[in-house]
Amino acid sequence: MTGTRRTAALGLALTVAVTLVLWSVPGRVDRNTQDLLLNLLIWIGVAQAWNIIGGIGGQLSLGHSVFIGAGGYTSAMLLLKTDLGWPVALVGAGLVSAALAWVVAFPLLRLSGVAFTIGSSALALAALAWMVTWTWTGESRGLTVPLDAVPDREAKFRLIAVLAVLTCVVAVLVLRSSFGLRLMAVRDDERAAAALGVPAEVVKRRAFLLSAGLTGLVGAAVSLNQVYIEPNSMFGLTWVVTALVMVVVGGSGTAEGPVLGAFVIYYLVNRSLEDQPMVQAILSGVLVIVVIVVAPRGIAGLLRSGVAWIRGRRTAPRTMAEAST
Image (tube, rainbow, N blue to C red; front, side, top):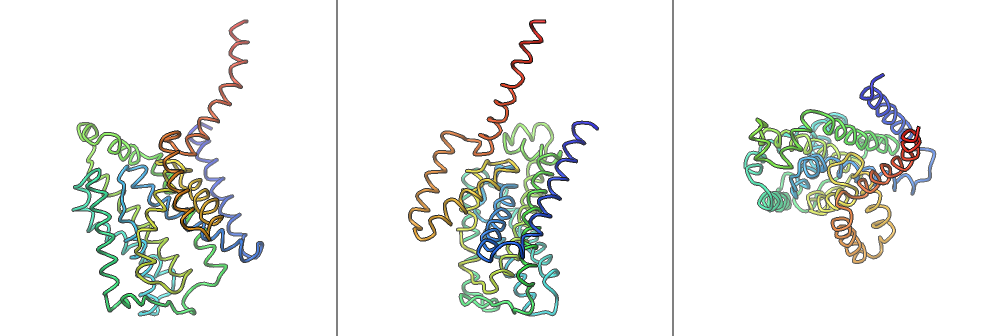
């Protein structure tokens, strides 16, 4: 078995093992622990989906809260206005979010750098203002999904676990694909990539659509979990700002970074200090600054450097022994 096939087989085995472990969680842990894991999985999904365009693609989008909200409201409206089940509503939410991304990508992705970030944040604020005043979706009152239309507690956990695993698998596939190589080339130097024949705008648009579709799926899962949704909670910038912090702290542009960052920010910071929001914000900001200055590749980069150092220490004596014979 070649190294590539061996790596793929190990990755598949790890994915199946993690999925099976998460699938077995309901009924094996208490309610508080299950809620903690469920929210952590939601943040892993959001952060990993954002990482595809923001980390791997290098486009610092602050507009992804639009896709959380679009996914959540699409699934809620489908369950309220039709007899379709929640699986159809979930798929519809992902498709609507991707379609919305396709529309806004044309003007947004013509921008770059700070202009793109500002433009995407303006999109998010405009969407929030629209939803607060849109009568059809309940305006600022929000919506309540019928309880008989949502999956039970165990099914919701398993759904969110599968979505979190799915976003991680997609990120790994992107990183290992030729598409991912082109996307990273555009991220590192768009002009040089274009000179080599890489269609920068097409590559960025595909990554944007993929990221938005996954984000919409997670948004739908959020609405199914919360049952009641309203514009400020679904379209607020908190979603994307927190995801950005998680990706930067964990390791931007890596598959494991968003997972590590979600654990650190959600569990070690937000949950541990849930009664002190000011301290949460300050500590999150300090972590981002420290990571940018001390470890630009995040926690994932530190771990990779540590593993490389250990391997170097192990092979060094063997190399010296071979050289002496």
